Image (cartoon, rainbow over all chains, first blue to last red):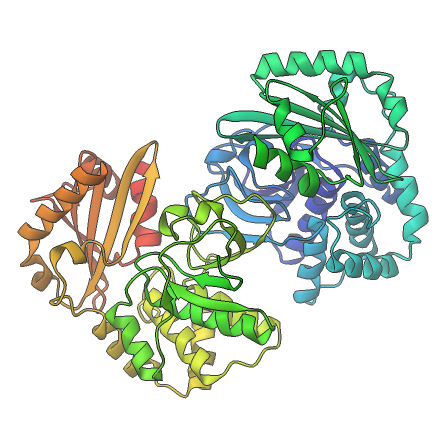
Length: 307
Length: 307
């Protein structure tokens, strides 16, 4: 067990999980705490774009946490999205913007969740509240996380607070948010190098409702038809995943980040939950959802409600 | 279903639950929100002392919440301590200082927990952060809650933040905290008027560990032997409660608030958890715990760990 307090985001880390871990590390180090940012999986290409832009390394991989290990969770709270062994860790703090579920502690803790678009927006507020100076590196990390989570403020999860934070962070970083943001988002849409197995796990959130396991996996693209060329193989690996892990419903969401639409491929015994929820029939296991880009706000609640 | 947002603390409300509900109501009304403080049970004598001191009425009783009802939880989060129907309510906000367990939402929310001694300490910070003026009534409500939860700053749950808040609130309220506090705490120790059934339910927190239900009930007194005169009858009603609700362990804690000690009466199939946890044998179903006053910090974690 490390004496250090580990800070990490969710499995299959996205840009918010990596950037917010690094920013939280900086925040806590400024306070004199012995902390270290870690990651629970591979860095995706979008996040790599950010790290390369800054010329910094990704946090080290964390395989699992030992009993009693002190940890800070950012950008998640559900144990099934967290590190192996999290049940026996000592969770000291959570900074998050998701619903709360599958989470439990033995002792009181510091927990801060706000219904905003991005964890980094809350971290930005923490810096301001504490009168702590935001340096350029942290400004770029936070604005990148906000651009990623809100798809350049176009996602319905976007709040006024995200907009305000992004604006001020862009000033500190002296960055043209639109130019930088589109390049960053595009970097994350290069799906060719991934196998189908990898695609369905790139950004997959597992949940459970009434004892039924379901997965909503999401990939971002600038060209949905391009991804659908691989539909047959994608369905095969999803079916394997369903069999292997006894999953009742698997939703694979292909989101067009430029036009803000999503095509979903839905498989499993409970596909009717998607049909009921979105009020449409699946055709060839698929459904086109206009204006849908947010898993958290537009997919997860609908599935959770109807499963 | 009410259009108003209901604000309430836990079942068997203590002074923090009632006072923090009223203070949060004031805070939200200042922001122009349509809110109403409610309570989930009878007001205890300590709390009544505070309300009488201010000449104000208690919040109205809330029997249960309807599906979709907007609510704000203060001083608790566990559903088994909350209003009937809470699973289907829309929880917009939680302000709390307890561990998190048995809590789940469908959507992102505003959640603020801090490991401090009292919910009102967090509310005090909220007023300050928002630059909102604290009027005398809210100052008295908050300082009463802090005195109650920290037993006049003597409980081990007390933090520097509670001390700071109490000091500043006393200045606003122009109250001598010690004189007022001892009178208030004493008012809450008049147990004669309660039946044994009432005593074991006055401030009872129910939890579950590995499928085993356990209850830790607590009463405050200035005279432990006085309460123990009723031991036989207390054990009878505890046994009935155990049978009725299939409870594995019932801990009845009699806390001497002036000398900061606790006598516990322990019944149920799993009494060994208490013996293991506190490293003592029960004698005549009892154990004396020197320096123990806090259920949250000194009783609950020990039982939870050993059950």
